[in-house]
Amino acid sequence: MTTFTLEPIGEADFAFRYRVYEAAIKPYIDELFGWDETTHRAFIRDNLTANSNHVAIVIDGERVGIAQIEETDDRISLHQIEILPAYQGRGSGAGLIRSLQERSVATGKPIHLSVFHLNVDARRLYERLGFREVSATERDVQMIWTPPGGQGGWGGA
Image 1 (cartoon, rainbow, N blue to C red):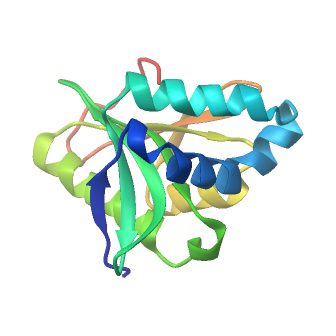
Image 2: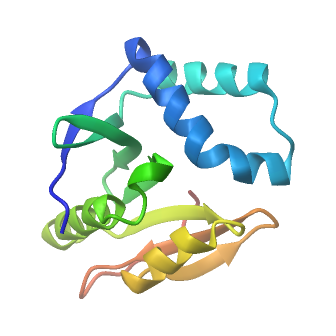
């Protein structure tokens, strides 16, 4: 398994955050809505400003992706996980999710996430790691992983 660390990121990391977003998500956005540079730059800037729960995924000292993880009283939410294409398929995403599963087992909290229907590789990864579909929209599939003995449920993203 790939060894990684997580580093907090914020507004000062906009260029890195945008580069990862564009590289990992643009193909899906293009197909679903069409890509508008101004709109997506504003989205990332607002997202970084409004949320302090972004982290860089770091392997051998190099930032290779981002995640946005939120833990509340009743769940762990993986709002975003994006890996630069050159590092996809090397285990960093699976490693991050497994670490969240360990946290889930320790706390008894389920993990919630959503994935674009178009992102079949990510969905396969989540299914392989034990996530199950609980609902879907035209664009996304909402999935959950429940720790052994946990209740789970889906109360939104």
